[in-house]
Amino acid sequence: MTPADGGARPEAAEREPLHRPRLGAAIVIGMAVAMTVAVAGIPREHSPLPAVARYALAIALPNWRLTEPVNEIVYGTRGFDTFGETFLLLAAVVSVIVITRSREPRRGYFGEETAAGRERSESDPAGPGDATEDAARRAERREQGDRPAVDQVAPRDRDQAALGAPAPETADAMTVVVRTAIRVVLPILAVAGLYLVAWGYAPGGGFPGGAVIMGVVLLVYAGFGRRRIGRAVRPALLEGIETAGAAAIIATGLLGLLLRGSFSANWLPLAAPQTILSGGIVQLFSASELAEVGTGLTIAVFALLAMRHDWTPDEPGGRAGHASGPAGQPSGPADEPGGHADERAGPAGDPRDAAGSARPGRPADRSRP
Amino acid sequence: MILANYLASAALFCIGLYAVLARRNMIKMVMGLSLMEGSTYLFMISLSYRAGSTAPVLLNPPPGQSTRTLAHGNVADPVLQNFCLTAVVIGVAVTAVFLSVVVRIAQHYRTLDSDRVREMRG
Image (cartoon, rainbow over all chains, first blue to last red; front, side, top):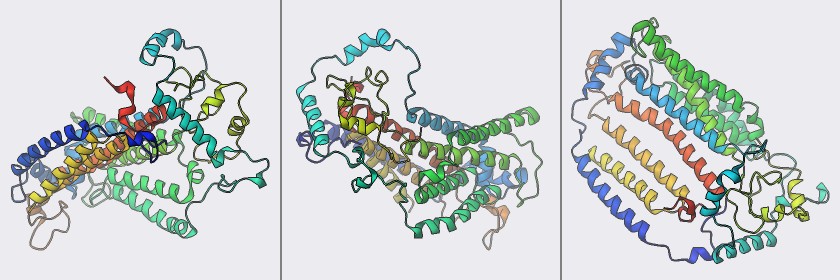
């Protein structure tokens, strides 16, 4: 990532405009006053519980056979609220997937220049850039020329590779101590996550259980690297499990509507308190939520980790390309961290360019589609 | 004195809001939003506290109390704990959305400075 205001760049020396801090401080002070006034009037530690809480506590044991009112509220009394939250989570995961996926290869004629060329030229007129932009671009090219990044120069043969270039094997960033500790703690954590969900009459439930499962996956990722976890964390598999969880939640609610006459009413027989099956649909809802939350968070985090360096290449003229360049150019991997696109645009290309695209050992965590 | 908790969460919220309004670096804006989220968790958990109460679990009640007295009050408010439980998970997912948008903006405009993202202006 290019730091916007890194150290020695001339832009950093510009005087920072003061309108943001001033306006921000005014709004924040107003907000602080309003919140202090509001906080002074809300219930404190000696006021009685609100009616909804007392109702939930009163019906937890008789109506749901649950000794854990929080679970009873999440999946029973306020089940509809949780239903909405579930699909908020699903929407967030879908947006992450849509935003982070890389560009598809061009498969046909879209006519984007014909359709939107006029608007684009209005918002981003062609022609010489302004002086600061040219200066920035020159500086960027000079920087790239000064110090070719180690992993972007292909050595003549592998034995001559510069120190610091990617080694043939993926880095095992963690020491053997950490990896052994992860191996030991992993089954315990995984069982603990499932335990939180299975014993629904004790504190727990699908949301914390799913978060623990995501923690397990992240631990494996941190300790053993992407390649090891990549076999289990396949988007197709995880997305399937997540959609199945969401479908099970919808089915649970709808069956309540069909069989008992109200959405998310309990339609399962209630077992005795303090058994795995006490709570009826609460347990079913909670287990579906585990699938939904555990896979959803894993998908979101791994989509973010696997984001490719999808930089928009520069136009041949030296101007930053906004829309015209990217997919039209036959440039191969668009995952270069900027700066090289100038050279790549020309068909001749310089040797460094060829070296860049034929580079042998990409780090495994970038090359995932 | 639970009022101190309320005021602390209000202060956290204001710090986060100031970061969102006054910072130009978009990563710092996302950090500010996360701070605002965290302040609401603190607020809800503080709001559910009751003096001398126990956890809302109707199992093995503390000495001197029965399950029935627990069910009629004198526990922490379970509804607000429910809100917090779901809000934490939603917060993680929403932060992931913000961060992926920031990465895309950084890749497209090659800056994290929101003042330099010119096409968003006006």
